[in-house]
Image 1 (cartoon, rainbow, N blue to C red):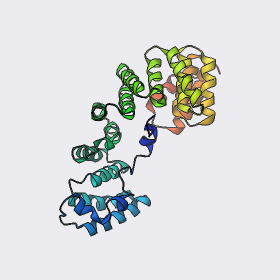
Image 2: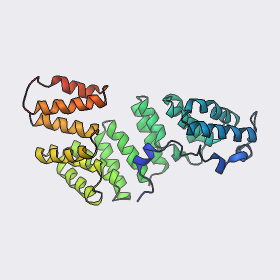
Image 3: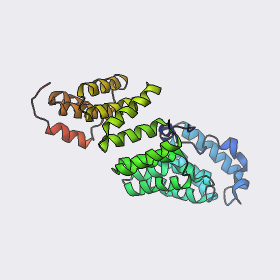
Length: 298
């Protein structure tokens, strides 16, 4: 089994490279460990890192930026401040700068895979879908037996709408780690989208058997049952998920589509209204809501 969950790494990746651990790993030796100091000496770098750490811990990301920028300028080939600077730009929403820094990190770091998934995510946030996919393809080439990298690339293909490629990558990842739930559920989603909902249903049920608390597995099972035309079972499954996670936009979306399929526009409208209350900018759901008849069944 992989030692880290991709979902956890996506959510909690921010200081992976060690802003909070600088003092433990590099402390005052920053300059001597990574090359000749320029205008900023190692003691000054250590003092700046301590101030940056305190600011970041207090959520004052913008104030930490010039401190880390100064360390980077003094030691431009040191991958540690490059990665830290990229993370800060990401937190500030400066995705172009974040992507450029992660690209630089790939060139100078002895562990370039540490930039995954953040480089690909930065490109995605910029709307550069092909650049995002390319980044995840490069990461898999760096470590072709890493199941996490299979997950990230499969997910990149999936959200780019390249479902056959996503299915292929998820399948290859499962050959490496057969009981990897995120890969299994990714494959199940592709089976729904590519016309194999019975396979998807069985795969989601297998994940639920080992992980009954998995909301993602309930979602995929609901999708598969809906595709099979088993609308009552799908509704029950999605309702179980919403009882646990009432603000799940994915579950509300699938259930709304189910209610439309069941010719229950009033129920669908109520679900879409819930989504729009959570995500007012969701244009796709707004379009669905607007095309519903003004009156209809429950």
